Length: 277
Image (cartoon, rainbow, N blue to C red; front, side):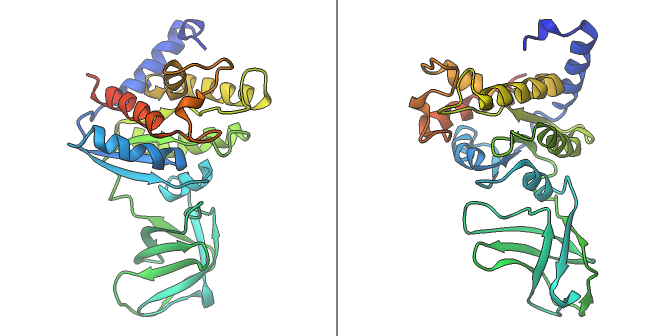
């Protein structure tokens, strides 16, 4: 949707909201957050911006709810086996909601606090979730459905580049809510962030249900985030030939994921946006 279709007041509100997001454009840290699309472009971004630290926080197969949870944007509630954290070592996590770390790989982890005890929440495809305390301490009782509080210190002052929604675009309201929860943690502290558009790929061209849903959600994201919105889908399409308004096949490794050339295009566009005055 063209910005000319918004009223002047609406566009001004979008401009002011987005401008406020760039209060710290010279941050030396970039937090690349998302799913497998993020995990693939982040190394290219690190190569394009060697003077900055790029944290690759992409976990394949994750929906927006899982991504929001592992940033601490939405609460994570856990139950520990026998409701006890031992003096040392780890304890089995019997229930967790939402699921923050499960993905298409094998292992992942997150540091945080349960019942006042600092530790590491780990996930293994075959072993499930465990919580390991970082230092020995007294046996600690943990009530059922106790909050796991994510340690944000590793990324809290970074530029946020958020790319989510591809794995759950069918649930537009949920995706929007989760994106807002994530972004608010940055916007409330006047820290810079970018929100990337959702891609469509093979079999998702004009006239398909997927195309219409993705296009509608992208328009909503643009209306919400204005100058902080990066239409990376359009950028990719402009770098190749596409008869049905999808990401060109020459830039993809499969029906949706990008190949090296595609990921380099993403990285260069983000570099341009990050370095813009």
